[in-house]
Image (cartoon, rainbow, N blue to C red; front, side, top):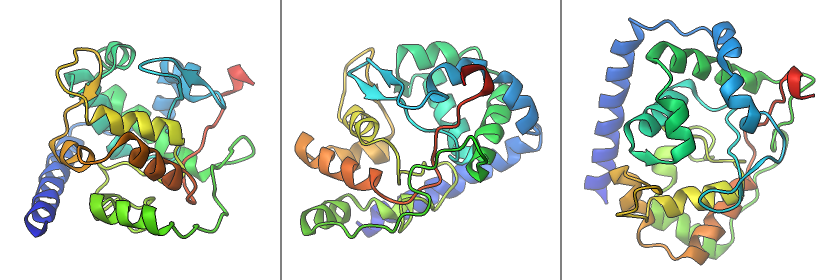
Length: 225
């Protein structure tokens, strides 16, 4: 396990260095990102909006996610490391500048305002049951996503706290899926973490993580109000 954690930290450092070097060429603008978000708000800007692929689940809250993570996720869809026909189709239309601008826009939305609907901004974190605590320890979830699951150790990792439970469940199952041209995620670290768990255990993890205080929220845009 120490070797695995060392590998995680090394990969995080390499990813951060690569993103930092790239940032010298791409200057993100949240204002520009707001103007480019038309492709996103039809799903991510509507409270309770549900997708039906690969099964019915709420689309993830991305307002308040870290900008580096949003860029990383979009690139993963673009490259096919995350398999999802709709997201791949959208991501392939985006340039590096587009991704940076969109990421900056969604990251700054955690600051909220009258339109914001924080998932659990003022809630007190619930203590996990003994069963869930053992599952969290088994998966070493906090080694990447932070002790509160809302403060990742590296910006390329997502905040999990407060995210929709059904989305987290579908995402975790995707790391267990192989040899499917339409569904699956190929991140080696997450595949290794997710593989040992049963569907019932993944649901318990997802339900607990979704109950935690979070920066994540859905912020409707004016055209959908």
